[in-house]
Image 1 (cartoon, one colour):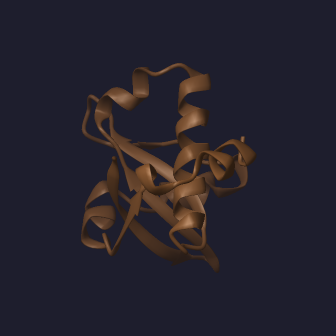
Image 2 (cartoon, rainbow, N blue to C red; image 1 turned 90 degrees about the horizontal axis):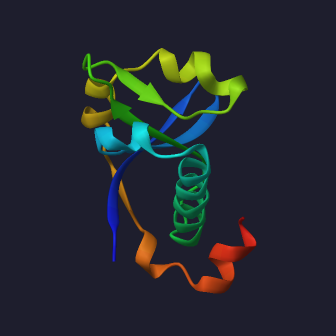
Length: 106
């Protein structure tokens, strides 16, 4: 069972579920990254959270990196890891997502 602290925030009229992850997320394959996002999105929806899941992590330089859709990148770049940590207000439990729901999100 994996539980993630998340910041559910609205920026520029868009609901985001920002999920801080370990820095090693950067070194996952693209396929692994997108599978993680799909699983987090399913868990968020199953848990009743609305918004677009955006994983974030600290780069080697300490700056925030993210995996956001092109149209949301400027909005996500307007925040930093400090903003995210100060806005943690929800949890999502990836282990609670039924397999049938998880696979339908892929």
